[in-house]
Length: 280
Image 1 (cartoon, rainbow, N blue to C red):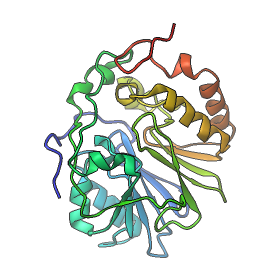
Image 2 (image 1 turned 60 degrees about the vertical axis):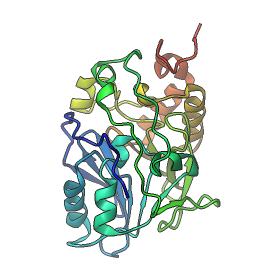
Image 3 (image 1 turned 90 degrees about the horizontal axis):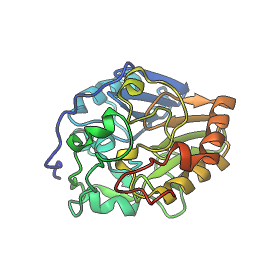
């Protein structure tokens, strides 16, 4: 296995960093700097799955959060990746070496996770706030975890998580997936729809909650991003845990999703940027 060559500490954080929230008895999310990782499993039952692997150099922190939730020296049965951007895989190699578990992802993310291809450079020219302007510091080189990397099942099931299904939601990255459980309508939306304006330093810092489109500086296909947001809104989720921001639920969530998809081109798609098709 090989860590990406540009894996490094990124000096950005939020007021939620280092805290966790239990959504249901078996669904818990933890905020690592500015990104959420999700731990799914009943702490009393032993078996659990980790969704995403946080920021670079955060392996020890994520381990401690997991042990606090599930007990010392516990380990997940698998790691599910929503996609392979730096803030979702930053501590992946550390956790694989510690836990020796399989990693599942959509096959369209495999080139970025097997040392073959790097993501496009973040767009510092895009319309947006400070975090967009400094996005050139964000890592985009590939990892190589091919020895433990496995494809998500074609039947849309999620390994280790009965009752959950994965949903392909490209746009922010080619193989991004969301996770959904029909029984209680919990949605893990990854970065297809998030609950904080991710390019704004102030809003990220204070975690101002609002339904937003994907982070502008790393979204390369806005037509697909719009279609993915529409696909998730149709699910009519009761609770949504996004890759960034605090969890939302109920009418506030559904109203926010409806407003987002109704005015997606105006409120989510930036006015300019190297990945933006002319809006006029």
